[in-house]
Length: 167
Image (cartoon, rainbow, N blue to C red):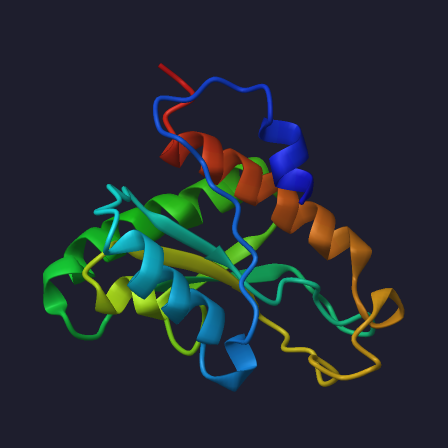
């Protein structure tokens, strides 16, 4: 939501939509529904799906690396573009934040229904996976607020790059 607040008055070549899906852990219910009932019927022209999932870090660990995720599955027609944009994402993360990056494959998150429909995807995921995610203990006391700040800075720079704010 902080990215949406920061970008609300920024003119970009491409529109930016912030969407929070429900039901990810129950089979990507929200994102599947959206792709099937909105994206495909409305023939939406989507340049990129940039998914930010589980980026809170772990409060008792060194959180200095963010994982940038790319598409390596079927359909293969969008894999090369996903790899190129994920490399740009990794560059943006190092330019606009103090985080190191690793590149890994995309899986089990809300960008998958878009990927299955042939859209280009990329995303961010924390390197140190929280042991309390999706539980009652998944709260600020278990997160690394400094890490979230760094992820936000990098994601902001990447979003501006992807939406062509800099002309």
